[in-house]
Length: 595
Image (cartoon, rainbow, N blue to C red; front, side, top):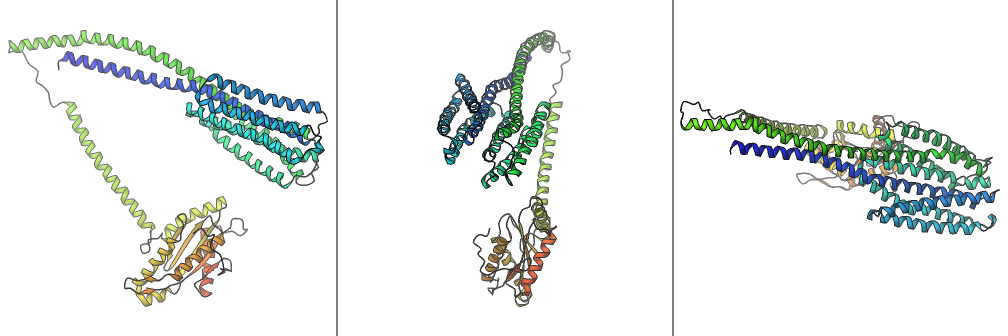
């Protein structure tokens, strides 16, 4: 190939490379621009949907108050209910209009959910209005409960719309996932806050103590609030650098979880005793509802921050697109100019020199001719790379063999050579972890210590090889009756130990009894054909974190199991004994055992 053609080929390749790089930059920024363009309306739609959920939940309050009490100011109560209904209708209409204007096929299911919500809300209002036409003494409390449940059902009918809009927003920009979930959880916190406050409406109106169901409902909702706030803090970790969000989050904690929930805790204490609250339902609403304002404020702040970030991304991507396009045009012009200069100032003299060398070669033999270089630096570099690659392949192979050897040595160090079970060292290593988990999280744990009865007689009669076969047979039985989560090991000699998490003492006794029965009924055949029957004694101890004198270590639990095993051995063998001083009843039903 001539030098001239090589130059143009290289020039074209460089130009294509340059255009590819510019295209990648433009494509990347266009993707950001497109995602932000789609995410902004998606965030706004979700913002409107969460507002609808808030208004629907807020409407339950006036309905609950009017159904369960006779207001001193009927006109004021009626105005409050109508205002709440108007707010719900307005929020639904706003959301529906926004969805219809966008004309996106993805939003069709959401519009259907909005229509279903409006229908469910109309039915709930009709039921409530029918009850409100009757004087309070003539209102059936069951019907009142049904009406309130219909209001709650309307909120539930709308819930899929929020999930769908959240999914659309996440699909438009996956980076919004944490913020969207945080906003949804905050909205859920607002709904639960309204529900827990409504628990006290009927008791305060009647000035009576809380019922068992109301106590359970309050406890359940209170726990959900604490859990939700913890999850919200985790979800909003990406906004920790935003002081406004941080302040709003702390305000929810101090103003609602502190003051608002604290106020309800005071009412809860009174409701569990005398029921003399000394407050009217209106007083409770006036003190409690303002404390909830920090929750929707946090939700709206997070959504506004997400919308601001999407707008900033959109604006930045637009600027970068414009700058990249202009820079590409300018750089392309400079590149073309540079190629022209190189051709005229570099390539052309070389071509002229080539013609001269050709003329000299034809006629003038005294002209020096360059010697071609085949063994150049590029060739040396490639040979060096091949050598380096060969060394690297050899090194990787050696590393792999080393890791496999380490794995084999680790397995051998943790395994009993005779039975194939975990050895004592490995059992204590893993058992300490299981015991620590049970201590920390107050979980159930059972330890079973087993000893083969009269094993010395087996060794004396059948020899040590026969005894080894018996131990392997017993180990196989133990392995067959254990769960995957259980730890099973040879403790020493003819003793075996098992650690069973997440079961109580009765289940542990059932497991031990199943294994004892299996060993007692098993006929172990030795290599020489002889049949050996053996039995085993069991000591069972359970870890109880609630006990005053609970075990402080795995060794303490083993010691109690060993004491129970001692009682089993001296009580006649072939039995299961629980610690402390509890002998297993032969009539015990093991149908609920985990193995």
